[in-house]
Image 1 (cartoon, rainbow, N blue to C red):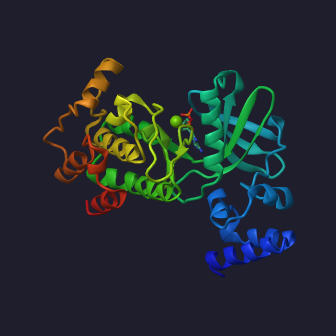
Image 2 (cartoon, helix red, strand yellow):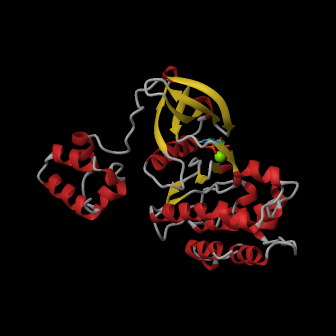
Image 3 (spheres, rainbow, N blue to C red):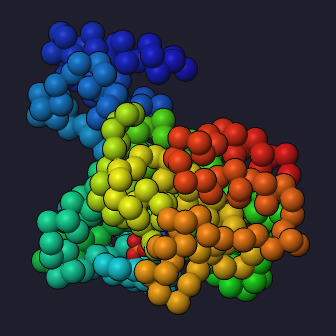
Length: 321
Ligand SMILES: Nc1ncnc2c1ncn2[C@@H]1O[C@H](COP(=O)(O)OP(=O)(O)O)[C@@H](O)[C@H]1O
Ligand SMILES: [Mg+2]
């Protein structure tokens, strides 16, 4: 198998010669079946002309599907814009998860942008530690996302059942999540909603899900729109001073605490009190928490985003537990 670099070179040459059938052939080679927009932009290829001539972009075999093409099974979960069901695509009998988002709830420009981002980002990524995106379609009532079905539960249910998790369990569940975040960072993506509900434990694989708050962010840029779930958001989001990908690292720290102790570190009766605690880094780790886990939490939950450890450092620490 030729290297991706070699294939990209050939695509570029074919593009210069306007050999659209060769481009189509080349992008169907497995490794670059899902070429990303940044890939083509790096090559200096105009997406408009490419899209017009080759029908590239995230593959979406379900664009003209209808809800009636699916047998709808049990409800797998619910969220802010709708529900997730286990479904079977009748023509192929393929089993998948369907996230149905109610268009009546997509009623502001802000929510619309988030849904667009969820589709755009999720359809452009592929990683063993991330729930796969198969395609999407819409009708008058809903937007439907088709996702890899994860037979199992989310980490929230596991935490609820066990109360708290041992260091070995934390290691098992979070190494894949950190690996997923390393992958996302390499694609300039921030997830912005790292929390137990968005981590799926499917058979023996752990997969990061829910790109409903995800966004692209170039290195050096900052974002200002508040996103995420109160218990896990970083102090820089609370204060509105601008944030970058290290907000995901903070949430990961809050998540490690949550799993180890049984409740999030800044838990309080009102959101306002939680935010005050976050900004003041006001939390304590019970003495019985494994010292390696405890040290890792202390390393991560620091106010200055620049002083937080890298994902690679965290991965290494988890591997050595
Ligand atoms: N692919 C999937 N397979 C199995 N369960 C899923 C899948 N995707 C989501 N779920 C379940 O549905 C819940 C809500 O899905 P999610 O994508 O997080 O929606 P929301 O954006 O509304 O939070 C998850 O917490 C999980 O329990
Ligand atoms: Mg979710």
